[in-house]
Amino acid sequence: MDIKVHDIVQFETIQQLENPLSLPDWVNTAPASKNYGVVRRMPIMNKLLPIGLRGDSREKRHGAFIQEKNLIKVIPPTSLVESIGLFNDRIYYSALYKMKNELEKHNLLWGPTGSVGFEMATSIHVTTPNSDIDICIYVEQIEEELLVTVGKFLDSLEQRIDVQVEVPSIGAFLLSDYLKFGNTGFIVRTKFGPHLCVVDNNKIKLVVNN
Image 1 (tube, rainbow, N blue to C red):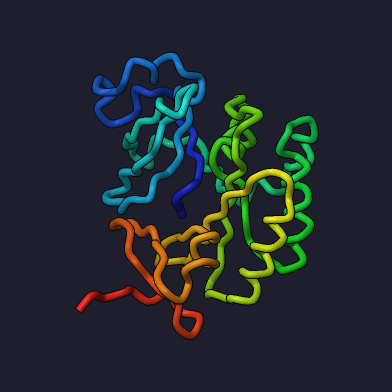
Image 2 (tube, rainbow, N blue to C red; image 1 turned 180 degrees about the horizontal axis):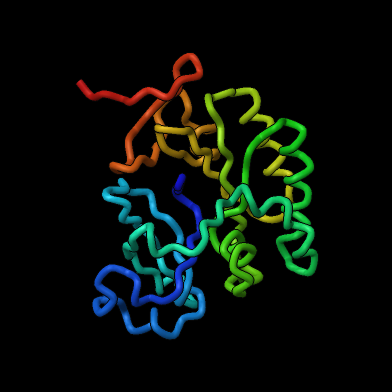
């Protein structure tokens, strides 16, 4: 099973999580955590998946683990794009609809993450009028001109859009950081922690301090 960071996983009960007795009390009553988690950016060993559980506020977040065999369903962010039209009564619909049309022009693979993605995947209402829209764009290599174009388009939208760019086998970076600091150093989030990197000849390279 190909499972990646940001994927939303469904399970039957929190009792299937590793060490369920150590979970915070709110996990037992929060609708968003009873059957769903979001894959975290950590190494996956022996099919033990690191997931994040969410409650009804930003303060209620908890890291947990679950065996892959206990999953009912895996929902990647990219699978949510085609269901955007089902959410035309939500405040984030207009921005997602515009993004879908624009990013398709560039043949970009992408999907909503964060609270918006979670809500779309689970039908559990977790967004608020103040929720940012988080999306992830998946690229095989860095194309500066394309990322600049996408950044300008997203800045033109009324709602705030937070964008992570995922590069296979490397990690992810914030598009806004890359556009500001691509030549001087920006943070790439990897399974083994954050690293300061630069882009050289369309390739991400680690900054090594002498």
